[in-house]
Amino acid sequence: MRTGGVDARRAVEGLKELAELTGGPEGARRVAWTDEWTKAREWFRGKLEEVDGITEIETDEAGNVWATAPGDSERAVVLGGHIDSVPNGGWLDGALNVVGALEVMRALAPQKRPVTLRLVDWADEEGARFGRSLFGSGSAAGALKPDDVRNLKDKDGVALPDALREHGVDLDRANEAGKQLENAVAYLELHIEQGPVLERMDLPLGVVLGTFGVERHAVRFTGQHAHSGSTPMDVRRDAFIAAARSAIAFRDDAAARDDVRATTGFVNVSPAIVTAFNGWCETSLDQRALDPDVLADMLRKAKEASENVAQEEGVSVEWERLWQIEPIPFDDHLIELADEAVNEVAGVSHRLPSGPLHDAAEMARLMPTVMIFVKSLRGLSHTKDEDTPEEDIELSVRALHRLTEKTMEKLVS
Image (cartoon, rainbow, N blue to C red; front, side, top):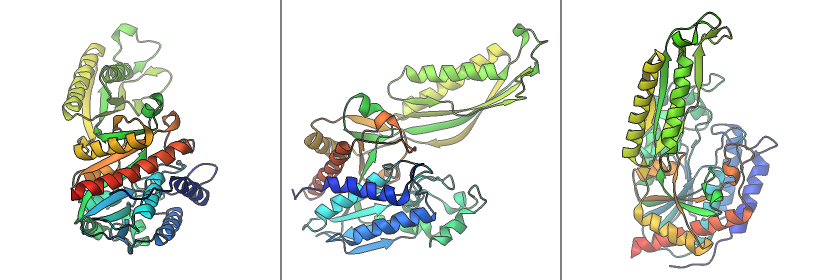
């Protein structure tokens, strides 16, 4: 099935319109469960209501917005994204997904199709206000348990259930959103890369292999603090030095591997005064890889390195896992179709993993899923400086359109 083209330029203009509505000098303000987010969703709903062929627009129990264009079968291809942003975020992160999908719906919804086409704007992908990402998609997938998030509060002390209630969502019914996925057979998502890989390769588009697995730990070193002037260097038990040496070892191990990540994010020390070296130091380690065996080996090597350094520095070390998620590969057949679509519109494609998580990760547990990335200038995202050339944005929307056509063809072949 090959239909008419998509108006990719209109997607760019729509993104600019949304940025004007819910942005400003410091960036996007569409934090979920706030008035600015509601304003953005009202704008988007108005755009959906204009689309010929969309017969239903509804909000589910988790606050996700669904638009449906029925086909000959109830089996549904789902185009997904999120309109919410981080505070002072960029004009593309999240918004490109749904605005690009909107243009695909404009092109395909009026056509006779063998399968149903649906668009979803997931609620609170970012987790910016309460710290729990993937709220809407996680609820629909059954991965979010109400009791796990019931006690979350924002910086002003507002409880998550209260904020949800203000926006018509009952936390204890959020998992009922899963019924929206009963007939879903494929999930497609477009997103900016949020990293520098495609730009470094001078490529506009790429196909995502899956999302990295994550091992996130607090690593604590305990020695003995003492006076910086009276203690000779060879008898010091400096916890910070042990932590610093370990952090370098973690980095060097990751740098020697292909396409993995290792990051030391926070460092806390005690007593943290200028006249003493530190007897206690706590650091974080965030490790990411697409291969679960590689991720496990990275963690094993990191623990070995920290223990060796601790012994040499005369300190002890302990590890506490903060969070873990397994790598989530995307569907091989959809990856092939996405490659074809990207090659058709851009002339060349590249496959790469996603370091950040996305709603697609929750959907990939349930159905065939794939993502298309468009390059990010300087690899920047979650900042007002986030940007992508407009011509590349247009290519990405055309690629999503072609991928949607190909996916519908596959379902009836």
